[in-house]
Image 1 (tube, rainbow, N blue to C red):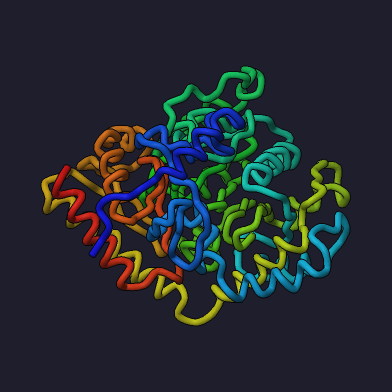
Image 2: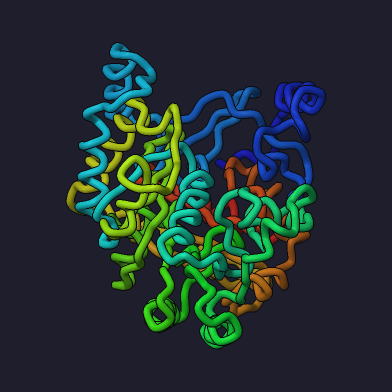
Length: 432
């Protein structure tokens, strides 16, 4: 029997106090539940596929700390490895043998990566890769896609997705025009728009950066030929192709979206999964490009906590678990059951809906669709999504608190978890 009402007294008290201590009461905007209504639940602990809040309520989790928990929260082998690493210290600020181990694993898995640099977040990885793109090509302009989010650095906050879309904010006050003057935008899945930008800016574009599968405007897949077309265009114009695989890396395939689709970019940014739940990011690519990074070359980038032993340990153990036979087959099976089930229930209960999944990443929009880009995504009924989100929460299901975010499954999710989730969805959608 699923729970149909939840007591959130302690969550409300803690969040109320937090609003006097932190802007909006949170450390990252989307956590504030602004787009779905109500107050956020405050987590107490996580394990496997589940969350417990401070009031003792249990939920099936489809956020997974926004992607990293692909093996399940607090996986015992990851925790055990971290305990061992903790005894040696939390940070060295110096070379660590574990960096070599994780670097080799990433290089072996990701087709584009011949050398890698570890950083502390996806934002940091994208900031660094932008500097590298410009230095290598000696050009300033870049192309990004509307609704694709590459972290909160000034030059990327142009028609960004994620929390910017969730809150309906302008790209951001405080970002000078000079910071974004060289950022060009195009609709996702629109090759003709990209061709036009190259024609309008001859010999000026350093490269194209994109989420190969969009997760920050909701879940949006590339049309057949789109990634291949970008590869051809960038090569034709002497520009670099960059895949932001912070979300898709090691999630939709062990080698990321580039392995899944057979399109190899010049550079790749990564994060989330390769930290196993600890803060980490990375960027990598062709040796000739990466050799420009200091101290091997003139492009400066540094970080005190980069490559720290705890993040490396968690990443190594997570990739070891993911490399076991049958891992991605299982993720595909349960995610397909969830995604297909949600769409069928939505349509059977009279709601316009579209969506889908790839491996352990999924999404559903409350619009008839199809959703091929951010403009399409914005046609979704966000008010209905807010009611759906609250209803699912009251039935013990934790979904991303935004229509414009993808969902994630993990190896810890069971068939029973999926069935319970679909039963909750049927109850909620029947009542909307």
